[in-house]
Image (cartoon, rainbow, N blue to C red):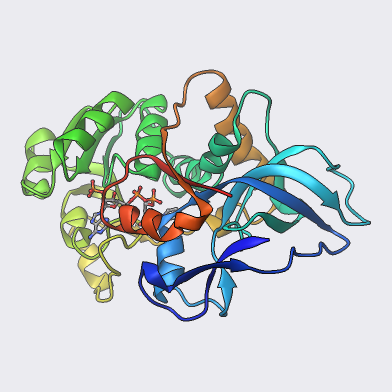
Length: 322
Ligand code: NDP
């Protein structure tokens, strides 16, 4: 089968499109024929070595597809079922072997690409808004990279919870998308000082929670956008990792909370995975959550897809199709 592999860490050119054996599923595994593999920013960290993984490796942490074959002890799925999953390596390929307990059934009416988009980015927006900080009606939220894959979903979930949302984006086109998703205010943080704008918009008060996936270039100012007892949720490094921080500064700034969450811990057990993915799929079916799946690349063009994502050229979800 064809797969996209990394043998040495590097830029997008480090990915090789090549033939490897179809994986053979173990007793508790399901062989999935991948119809749509989701591209996520974390794939670029694993490719570059910012997040170290054993090499060589097939990239990709989520997909939607069809069950091809099941291991002898699998009871929840059978050949032909439509499924989706996340947090299992190897999705940039024609087939992936997935532990049964990581798979969920894809409801009728949800496409494979939507399934892929809902799993990693949808479940991330879900845990950020429901668990890391439980958004309440009347809260104010700052959401960076608001027109990105997670960003557009997080805006919608924050609005569903009754919050007011300030988004940041780099272009006017992206600002339109963030507004269409429900953002009350959008700041072009590439042109305007977002801290000053947030203070202006909130009458000097600041926000209850800052969701920061940009990292290095936004972290310090995001903290300064928080009101007393506010939550700083640093969940990504699109501009580079945050490497220096003095926790003692959280006290005088208003006894702030700081967390650095990852999806893995919020879908570690079956109950959490079913709860989060179930909510996301139900909201899609009810029309409450709109997925923007706009960018499709053939599997052979993973390199171009990564260049587009890292070059801030994409909005919403980016999909690879084998
Ligand atoms: P996005 O679609 O949001 O793409 C990243 C966006 O970050 C860009 O479009 C760009 O938006 C913004 N950005 C700001 N500065 C830079 C920069 N220097 N280089 C590139 N992009 C920049 O990606 P995803 O939705 O896949 O992921 C969003 C973030 O969330 C990532 O940081 C990812 O690692 C993180 N994440 C974390 C998870 C977790 O559990 N911790 C799970 C899933 C994602 P703009 O042009 O508007 O600035």
